[in-house]
Image (tube, rainbow, N blue to C red):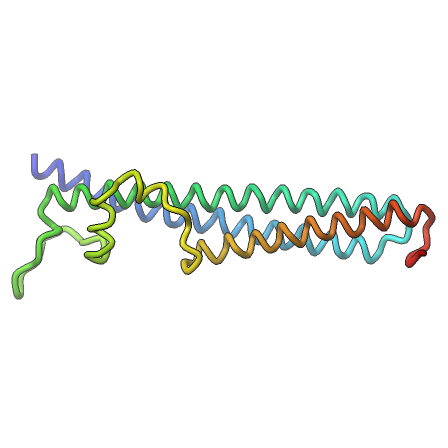
Length: 178
């Protein structure tokens, strides 16, 4: 039984690493995609001398805003999946007695500890559901990426509004107008 528990713990460690990597990969993709869309929209706006080109750039800005919103959602959900994997890992550590202090010069055998601080372990065990559903910490890397995605979303919306107004206010081909 103890061997089965150890195998489950090793799986939980692997799942935790997988969730961290998957969440980060998704976040990097969202940042790269939205940055590229925003750059394309700005370039299209500056090159477009006719209303058709400007209307197309409005659509590209809107696509960027949608991509940023999906990126924010994916980053938040990824953090939740990572936290759920953390909970599972901590519960296995507790069942195996790995959360107990190690005697001087002792070790836990072939099991690698997950590296969570004691305060974080206590917070996880105090409220499992509350821990999984916590908001993304703005001080974390994923939190900073979410803030950056919010900024990109705001720039996309602002770009769509400004160029959309230019299409409405300047029905001809010339900019600036009025």
